[in-house]
Length: 85
Image 1 (cartoon, rainbow, N blue to C red):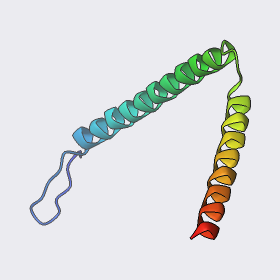
Image 2: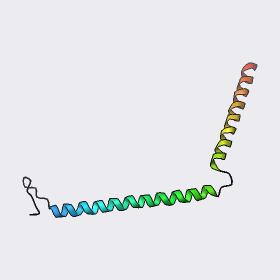
Image 3: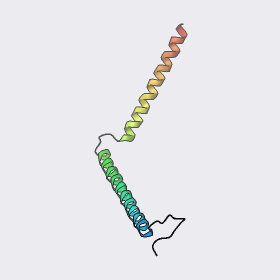
Image 4: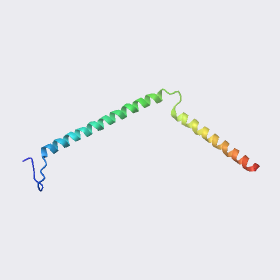
């Protein structure tokens, strides 16, 4: 018997099972597609970073050094301006 009665409500169990199976297959396929896209983007990103003349870590260190120098210069200018007034 493929159908049970729940107070007049009679879902087709075979149809529900087929729907769940197809939904599960679709979810797995979607997850696999997402993983494939992630791998492709990560591989492309690594290749792009390798061909840069300056590594990102060195660029970040240089930018941090420039920011510190600018901050120090601003502080010194503020202090020298505050003593004049």
